[in-house]
Length: 141
Image (spheres, rainbow, N blue to C red):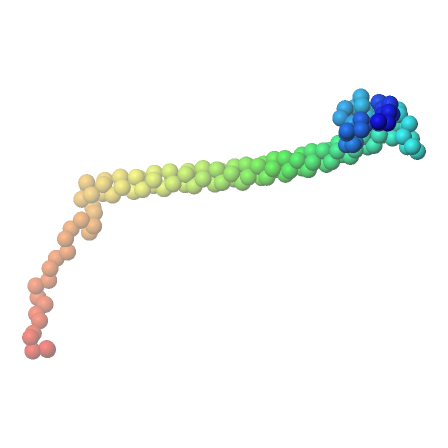
């Protein structure tokens, strides 16, 4: 049997061929310090920082869009409130007009009742007289 070569901590054991991914910032820092055939020291950390910066820029864009949406919604609510206030004022004016008309109707009813009480309003309350001098001939003349 041939003797096994001694495995270094940087190479995977002979049974494991899967590459190891950096799962924490500590491992990323450790890996960035290791010599890696032509890569600059700190390149992994710099790439992670760039990716984080891009993600933050995306988040900033989403937040700005959300703020714009909120501002538009607030402006819409203010316009609707102004419209509702105008409608409320119109309704108050209409209500006042109805009250004035009701007062006028009540005043006219009182005047009519007073005139009837004095006997001056016979034309409105007396029955019309039936005329008996109209003769209808059956022969058509």
